[in-house]
Length: 114
Length: 112
Image 1 (cartoon, chains in turn blue, purple):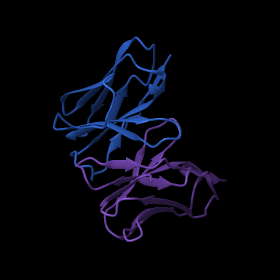
Image 2: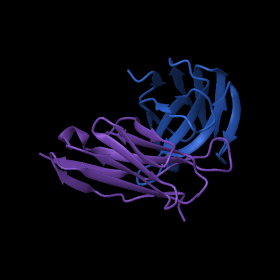
Image 3: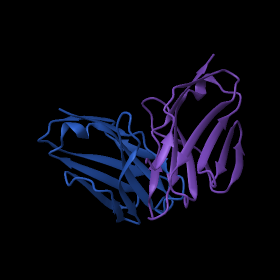
Image 4: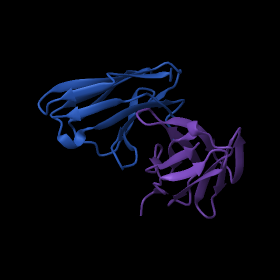
């Protein structure tokens, strides 16, 4: 039990599909993050939410759309993805979104685009 | 130049030995440094964090920070086969609220 739960664990979708990834944290944190992890590449920060407000969008294509209804839940809506989007998508949380506090990760969603 | 660099390895050490993992970073103004362990198919798990120059010890793990030389290292004493994993270095760089950058990780194998 990591305190950060992601669903689904695995997702296979076609390029024209629409799907959503879900993340829930039970740690009482106020900041949540989406990361992309591809083979042989460092973790890439995608989005940051601090107290439900988006504070970072690291030039992520619009086919990825985040949603943060409250401090405990974070979604990543996917549509018209490309094969290069196949990766492990990790959600994380931390007490605040200042970047200088440890982040706690979920187990990730392994996404495969056909 | 990459913001955070690690030797990708693999690094192999015999059981009981000291494993030394190194990380260099580009931004001299960086203040916060983290080490994560990631088992294959699993999420990154925080091992240690360090903010001040010098050593910080936690059990078999010691983080060493040298801001003048811009490197941070992780020592694992009495290495165990269960320590075999990829170790990720993360650094909060200056110039933004959430500029946390990760290295590509070093793959460690502890040989029984």
